[in-house]
Structures are given as structure tokens and as C-alpha cells.
Image (cartoon, rainbow, N blue to C red; front, side):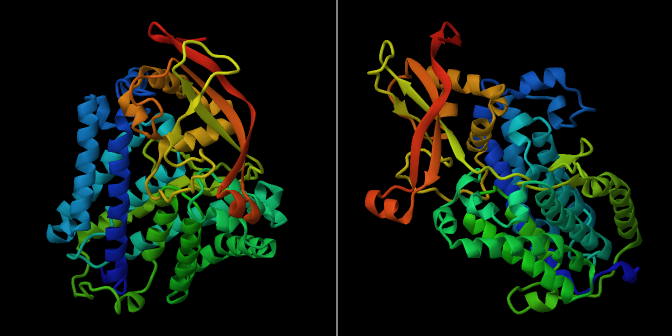
Length: 479
């Protein structure tokens, strides 16, 4: 069955698998560290409550068999440890069937988390990790040659990711067509990074060049992934460089990193051999049962690709959509519209007995989202700060704050250590506040002159009220 083997992709497979294991580690660790506050029994959207109204058929997950805070944490930490072992070479040290089982377990453990994660896990990179993780099951290990069909499926996934993102932009906000979106995007993106201020202040003609380069990378270059080497490798390298540019300019969890990981699978071994030690190309071939499994998986992806392709061709294209509960073959895309003005919800508390015009309010600082104008944005990606991201969405539309924001405020009034642990700063370390309120502020990056004069990265002004002051009344929040 050697015609199913890609004999010049041994190192590309090795690099892809190790890099994917790193992303899995980050995803599982983030799930474990944020679970109690977001999804635990006393969290903002408890898994236990979700399971009472959702069956396995609608949302496949291990937690339908048994759920507790300890069980969830056991699954998350087990996934992280298994991914670390994979990074260390576990799957190449065991027989082929065992290696496939390891990748399958990683996939199902993370699927179990995503499918009970509710709004906190509604981001496109969750499905992207699951789809890439399932394809890794059919990549094999050092016992077999790299399967050509699986490598092509990885390129098909990268194609849908990039081309879908390109189409959604061209069909969406007019600023992508008139090349002005980057006049705003670096400032208004969900979570700016440490370099975003500098990217925002690049000359506007350079922003136009950036947008044009983005269109070329997402709408033209993806087709070259299916050409012979080295052209396919050049296409992948262009995408990798573009994604690294995005990594520098903002925080998008592991979206950019997964795109890079997928691009690594398309690089030719001739490029990787000088810098990456590996097994070379031993004459192992592909056993018939493994070949059959790869063919079945390929056929399944072909069939399931109907809806994603139809979505790509539709004038009503959907972004980041899973068409089945297993997240097998999905649609992707981002920033079909770009916000032109940045709004932030600023949460404050007071320990005074009442509130009025003279009340002294103390601000809660979040880890990633903008708060104190003097604080420079930090680099968090590939780690995902889920609360910070949803705070950005809530500032755009209050509907995104349902049903978790009222529970968040209540936990602040209770002094809940798990929820407060998600924040950068607790202004009430000794006792919880008596009142909490939330205001809406308009933010923009300071100019170069303002930055030099004030030392601030942001300028902000209060423009409205998101939540009037509330306090605890018994075990509930009220005015």
C-alpha cells in the first residue's frame, strides 16, 4: 500500500504531532484552572445544572456518566498529563494501535469538556482543536509511513480555516473591501497584546498593505496547498508567517497557533531536516488495517464536508459553526465585521454603607482585558482567558452577558475566591464589598504625544451604566 504513503513527510508529521500536543496541554490546563469559577457547582454556569436539561445525544460527554468538580478536574489534568507524555514521545514509543488510542482519548476528553462548556466554550478554536485532534488519530507513528490521505485532510482543514475567514471578510464589513479595517482592528480587537498599540500606530498606507496581504493569504494562497511540493510548502510557509504576524498583534487564544501547527504538516522534510532531528524515512510502509482506517476516515470527512462547502458558497455564510455534536468537520471564520469604537465594562465595588455622588468606588482589574489606562496590554495567547473574552462581547451587546453576569456580580459580593482568582486584582482583600456596579467606558489607544506626556496606553471616558449599584439581599442580588 505504498501509494498511500507520503515518504517525504516524516519530519512534518513529527513536528505537527508534537506541536499539537503543546496546544492540547494549554487547552487542558486552562480548563482545569478556570473550571471551578466558570463551570463548577458554585460557578457562573454550573455543568451540573446544564446536564439536567441536556442529554448525551445532544451533547456527547463523559460527564453524562458521572459529574462532580473533582471528576471534571481529574479529566482536565489527565488530559494535560497525557498531552505532555505525547509531547515527550509517548505515541512513538508504543505500538501503532496504542498510539491511535492515545490521540483518540485526548480528543474525547477535550470533547467532553467542550460539550458541557456552554457559552465559555463557544469559540471557533475549540472546534478547530477537536477537528485537528481527531485527524491526528489517523496520522500514525514511527511504525508506519505518514499517510498521504490524512496529510491532505489536514491541508483541507487549513484551507477551510483560511478561505472561510477570507470569504467572511469580503462578504461582511465594507472596511475589508476598502482596505480600512486595520485602522480600527488593532485597537478594538477582543484582547490587545503588548504590541497592539504599536501596530495601531503604523502608517495608514501600511495598514492597506496589511489588508491586501491578508486577502491574498486567505483567498488565493490556500488553493496552492493542493499543488505538488515545494509549492504547497511555500503556501504553508506564507500562512505561517502571516499567523505569526497576528500572534504579535493580538491575543487570540490558540487560533493562530493551531493554524501554524496545521501549516507545519504541509512543509517538506527537505526544509525541516537541517534543523529538526527525526527518524528519517525508514522503509516501514503502511499495514492494510491502518490503511483501511485512514480510507474510512477520509471518506467520512468527504461526506461531512458537504455542509461546510455549502456554507462557503452561501451568501449567508456562517462563522465558526459545528454541523454535528462531535465537532467533526466545521466551518470557520473571524471578524466578518469590525467594531470601530471600543467599549469596556468596568466593574467597581464599595464597602460604604450606602452609595451616592460622593461614594468612593474601587475598580476590579481583569487579567487581560483593558482596565487601568496606565497598564500595558499583556501577552496571554495561547492561554485563553474566557471571562475576559466574554466581557468584551458583553460590552458590544448585553445579550452576551446572559446568564452569567448576574452570577459574576453575586460572587464578587460574596467574596468568592474562585471567581476572584480569575481577576488580576481584588480591591477588597479583607472583606467583600457592600455594593457592586458596572459602567460602560469608551476606550481608545493614546496618541504618541499623549503616551509621552501621560505614560498611559489608553484614554477612556465613561459613557453609560451597564449595571446600577446592587447588593446582597439574603442569597440574592438586589438594588
